[in-house]
Length: 303
Image (cartoon, rainbow, N blue to C red):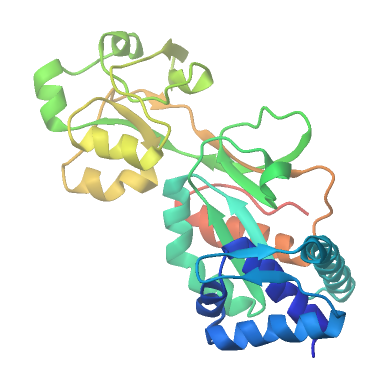
């Protein structure tokens, strides 16, 4: 019996709550998973799980074994990562948080990364606007804008050009702003939280103008913001690359001609207490070389 594999099965059974869920995850049969747990119980000489038709429950010995199993699996993972760092091998899973729109762009380019590194897996997290990297077990956080987390290491990879856009229907109903200060009288689409995201900066030959904007509809999801602009809800400030097709089709129209919005920095954040193993460096290289050029960013990967 492979003891480490069996301990991993025990952990997944208790995480997912059933033998059948683990079987589906692994492409195995429920009876095969059950036999592996039975073999582990026989090896250890104790009953680990009380089985019923409705649920599974750990025995007292099972609780203690589960704790040790997690410690063993963590130690094995750490050993493999250390060996990979020494050998330069790119393997394992990288957990990356990214804005939704950037995540969509990454998904279209994912075959390049996976073909380049057959032993690498990437998990994208796109559901939240802010993250606790340590608590969420994140290796990297790709964000638009500067990081405000003093305890994290950051690298600015480049800047993405943005445009202020609105639908023709919105502009027909509300009029065309001609100066950034006119945006105060318009519905601008922003995150709900007050802060720097509500300060839009524009520049022309005479200098830079900053204006605090707001509106009757807010969301912290960039894709939803773009959809709201298409529906005529208000004016959106977004990366030009993600709205290019809508601009070409006439569904969105640039506002404030002659005024250039301030580009947004593209920042990679990673916890300061962690070293960068080859798998993480491979993802950084991928972002800098294969993703940011698609977004017309100007940068190279960090050394």
